[in-house]
Length: 485
Ligand SMILES: Nc1ncnc2c1ncn2[C@@H]1O[C@H](COP(=O)(O)OP(=O)(O)OP(=O)(O)O)[C@@H](O)[C@H]1O
Ligand SMILES: [Mg+2]
Image (cartoon, rainbow, N blue to C red; front, side):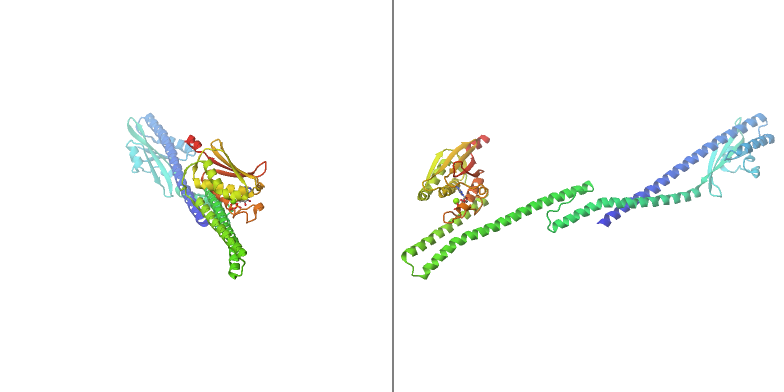
């Protein structure tokens, strides 16, 4: 991955660098050359014009219509004098195209140029320029300017100048271009290294993090660094890791709850089964006095009842917690439900010597009558069990705001602060009532909490200031609901 990114970057940068170096150089060179040529042409043109008008003036003054020997000599003298300062090669031709004056070559005098295209054009009265390559590889620009008197060509000012050597220039240029490209390559290598580090290292970091996460270390998180895209990737990874971690924690918790539940159930089953088995074995041995035999049989019955109650409670819990809203919903009068619950438990509470009192009233709620009755029954069962003989359990109804309130108050020992968060857990029994013969399996309040939750209600436990425990139920009243809509 690393080499791949680096090589791609390198290739891209090199391509850009070389193309731009070569392209720019070629462009500027061409521009420079054409500029130089234009300048040179301008100079030659003005020189030619000046010279041609001088020749024309001389011929005009001479009167015989052509340049005399004397005039040519004077011009030649002057040109040799001036010519040293001028880089151009200047020739003055007569009306036949034969050189009268040559600024650089003594032997040039008398040479005939009439066949040269630009000179031929000038002899015909037309100014003309030409570019040609000389034998030594130099570019030469020539200008032929006719000297005209009374519409007649009397001579030609023939100027030329070499441009810079193209070959030298090209060689020089290639060397420089090579140097520039080499410099570019070095720069590109450095840039590629820096860039690829900057790009690739955070990615490698991220990959390492992902690998350790996959290996089971769910606490690792990516460090967001590098480009914004890689930061976004790291953030996304972290969000995903958070999600996975949360789910894992939940799954583990769920797992633990399940296995604890199973061991709690087995534990609860063992006690009554042991008692039943012990009693049955004793009876099987035979030779048991009538009274004892009755005792053992009643133990078997009692423990079987306890087992079936446990099975019922577990089933109830399972139904409520696994329910998907198919509770039979109806309007429930809480006072009536409480009265029925009290009546149903009367044999039990009477046997415990406890009075149960119902007071107040509350607005009706929406829910399942049987289940709500079961809630009150469980609370009254607990309250009457913990209230001393001839004590009173009070079921009090009230309306608070938009809620219907039911309180079950007892005169028992109250409830320890540390137990309050746990009493609604399955199989939880507070230390004070560890005695299994009085208490049940510890499922009663778990059922209460599950039913109350499924009714969008709330249940809380607290110790009353005057002693004893208060369980408070809150449900949204029907009146409140209709006001809401
Ligand atoms: N009114 C109360 N006053 C004080 N403690 C209570 C009261 N009601 C319940 N508790 C405590 O909460 C624990 C759990 O109650 P819960 O009703 O769930 O179980 P249980 O009564 O022991 O058994 P089960 O209801 O399954 O027969 C009880 O063991 C008891 O310690
Ligand atoms: Mg109970």
